[in-house]
Image 1 (tube, rainbow, N blue to C red):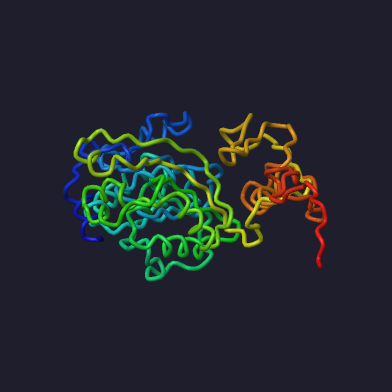
Image 2 (cartoon, rainbow, N blue to C red):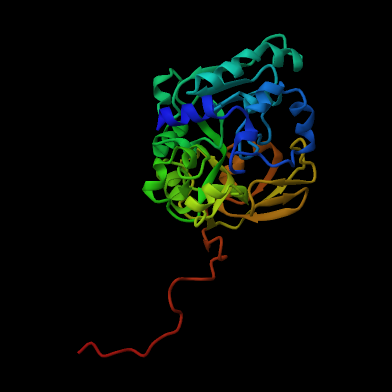
Length: 346
C-alpha cells in the first residue's frame, strides 16, 4: 500500500487537475486573512497540493506545529507565516517527489515572508512510525494533517503517535475523508480508489471510537461537506457509498469525560482572538459571540481553560455540582418515568 500511494502521488499525478474526484481538493472559499499568505505560495508547491480542507486553526503565533503527510509543503508554508519567525513547522512525508518540491522552495518562502531564517523543515518518514523519527514526547503545540490519514494502513497508530507528541492542552486539527458506512475490503485494493482518498476512508463512527481509544475522548467536528464523484469509472465502483470531507479538532486533555456533562458552567468570549473579533467557533455546535455568556459542558470548559484559548474567555463555575447530561440538560433519561403497579414477589 505504501508503494501504491507513493507512485500515485509521486508519479501518476502531475498536479491537482489530474485528480478524478474532488475528495483531495480544498474549497475555493479561503478566509480573507489567509489570502495574502496563499498569494505568496510558489506555483509549483500549490500545483501539487492535494488537501481536502483548511488546516489553519486560530492562535498559532510562536507555536511549534507538526504536519502529517505534508506533501509539496503548501500547508507547512502557510502555517509558517502564521506561527512567525519564532515558531516552527515540521512536515513529515514519505514520497520523495513531493519532498523534493517542498525542499526546493524553502528559501523562496523564507524571503516571501520576510524571515531572516527559515522556520520550516521537512523529514522523510511514515506517519504511523513517528517514534522512529527522533521526535520527543509532548513537544508540539498543534498537529495538523490534510487528507492523508485516510491513506494510512494503520490509522490507530497515527492517532496514538499524535497523542504522544502533543503537549498537554495541545490539539490535533485535521481534515480528512469519511464514509457513511464501512468500505468493503475488496475496494481497498484498487490503487485509484485508494489514491483518490476514497477506499481508505474510515466509516465516521469507527473514527469516533478510534479517536476516543487513542486518548482523544471528545472529538469535535468543525466543518464538513459532501464529496462529488464525477468520474464514471470511479462512480461505478464506489458510488453506492457517500463520502464527506470533514475537519475535526481533538484536544490532548486527559481529564475530559467520555460524555458531555453539565456542571452549570458558562463562559464569556472576550472577542480577542485575531480574525474572530465578533464570533469564535470552537466547533460546529459551539459558537461564542463576543461579550455574551454561553452555558457549556464540562468538556468544553476544560478545552478552553486548558488550551491556548484560555486568556480569551471569562470563566464562571466549577466542577462541584453535577446536574446530569449537558446535551439533554439533565432532563431526558433513558429510563421510563412512568411507575408501574407493584407486582407480588410471591
